[in-house]
Length: 304
Length: 304
Image (tube, rainbow over the protein chains, first blue to last red):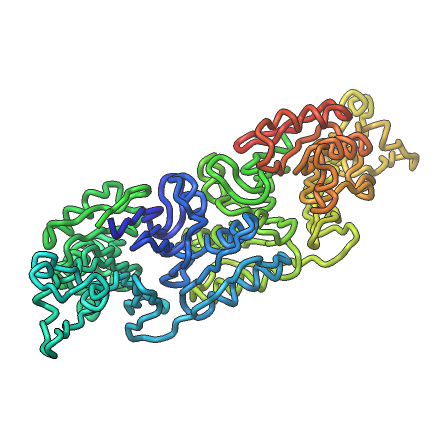
């Protein structure tokens, strides 16, 4: 398992008893991330018994309340739990000011490293990188500055092809690392064996793209091309296509179209408006263009 | 019914699945007030089907998150619901800045009158008054600037004593208003009948005092003296008396003592620390000094 995504909330606008605002808990290559953090997210994390003290980074898409009003409460809880591990917050410019103001007013001193990475670019950029994972922004079109996020595993090492290795007496265990790194093998006579003849391609990398909130926007297609899992917002159905445009949201049909154009493997839809009683209508509409569509739902887990 | 109080949350610190932070919905003489507004309060208001669009004023005791992190979400929801009625927020200095900053960042324009009444006084003051209700602050002792609130009905009109009136031919219906207002009656011969001989005392006024968060503080006793209903925080039991002092909270025994000294009619206790599995221990401890003690609990209603 390289990507494990748990939906904590997937409804738009105001939180209700059984409709929680956007938040997702993501494990990718043993990195633990939170994406968006609407009001009540910390209770959802507890409800689904997720190891939320392990969250290393929180990625906030935009500063509408249903995507971040739970952040200050979660940070306060980390503080009360005497967290010591660093916490990194990625989000639009302004997020630092609003969090620090609230900490100041409550005379709270944070006992762990709290780092803000404020985003302002309108082009996709690499904002997080370690030896196993990369995160890129996906510039979205909404009423305020908004980014989706593309979470990608990094390509691992090439695999030693033992069937080929055993035919070469000269190759020893101490040479494997260089082969895994893609280097050719230099024989004693000074000639080279091509790396591809001794190794196999690394495990294919997996990726997850989160896109909320946004109007229909084909310019994201090259960024999310071929990703394994795409979450795309679908606040409305086609019957409210004009309202979707005015409020800069997407319809289920449009989400399906983006998934198709980007040739993703699977689409999850969410950010449902409360005006629609039957969520299956969203699924059916998206499936008109993209068959492998699933509905988001609080507590639902998606594994790649 | 003149006072109707519904507890929305009564636990301290971090919100959990079945433990909600402080908030109370108060109806007094047909005024609808909210007291404190921890994270998730708007969901609790929906859960208990309270008419939350009617809230006229919100009274925030202090700027610790478990008492106000739900406020910005509730205001945003009012805005999405196209509220037109004015909303008045009473709370410590700083509350206006933090709410307006969040509204600015989300590019939200409020479509109703939103008025902030920031408090700084360290003495009890009358902060709200209309023809039927008064609200006074109760200065509390906590780690940050904190006020409790005393909600009092205003004394109504005196009642016409019909048994006496019918014996006086000169008194007509048009004279009743002056009698209700307490004026003496002037007879045709120029002599006066004393008001007390013609009227009865008005219905006794009811009052509710909310005191959270605070350490044991006898100086509040004169302010809340004889009130019908007192909510007093009890974060700890006597076993953590020293911790209560350090963190500027109260024990159940101390809450009971304040209720006894103030000769209130009924005490409600809440703001329980999660370290205590059995809430009845709080009740028993308070009852060592004050018998008529009730435990707060989400959804519980208290009527005076």
